[in-house]
Image (cartoon, rainbow over all chains, first blue to last red; front, side):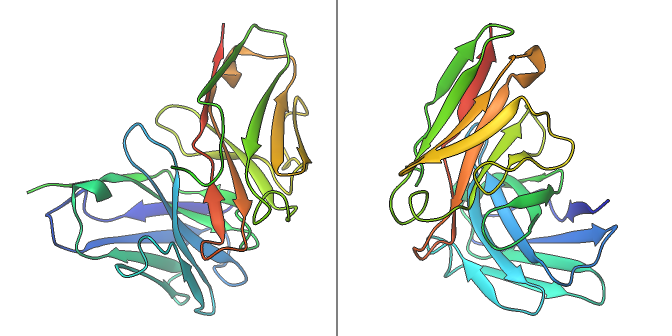
Length: 118
Length: 111
C-alpha cells in the first residue's frame, strides 16, 4: 500500500520560501506523476503542479513564477518550494500521486497546514 | 472562481438517491474521459471515489456511480447513508495551460 507523508515547517514568514517534502513509502516513485495540491482553510482544492519521476513538470499558471517541484528518486521523495509567500498562501498542502497526469489522484498524504504569518 | 462548477450544497434523507453535478467546458469535461470525483470528510485528505468518468477504485461502494453528458459530469449516490455526509469535489483533465482543474466542491448533508 502506497503511503505519502508531508514534512516541513508549519509557519513561514511573509516574503520567505515555503519548503515541503513528501516521503513515498510502500511503492516506487518511478513511473508516476507526483503532485502538490493545496486547500485554504474552509475553501476548495487548488492544483499546484506535478512532476513526472523523470523530471518533466507542469505548474498552475497562477503560481508558476513562484513554484518549483523536484524529485529525488534515490530517496523516494519529492519536494515543493513556493517563494515570496503571502497570507494568501496559508493552506493545508497535500502531496499526492496522479496515476496518469489526468487528475486521477489515487493516493494522498494526510496534509500539512502551513501558515504564513510574521 | 473554480474552473468546474458544482452546486455549493445538496441534501437528502437516508436511503434516498441524489446526484451532484460538475459543469465544465469543451476544453475539459466535454472533451476528455478524465473526470474524477473525491470525497472529503472534515480534517481528512480527499479520497478517490470515481475515476475516468464512471470507474470505481477497488474498495469503493457500488452505491457511488459516475456519468457524463456533454460538458457536465455527475456523481450519483444511491441508498444515502449518514457516513456519506462530506464534501465532494470533481476534477478534470484540461487542454488549457492548467492540465488539472477542480470544482469548487459540494457539501452533502444527510438529513
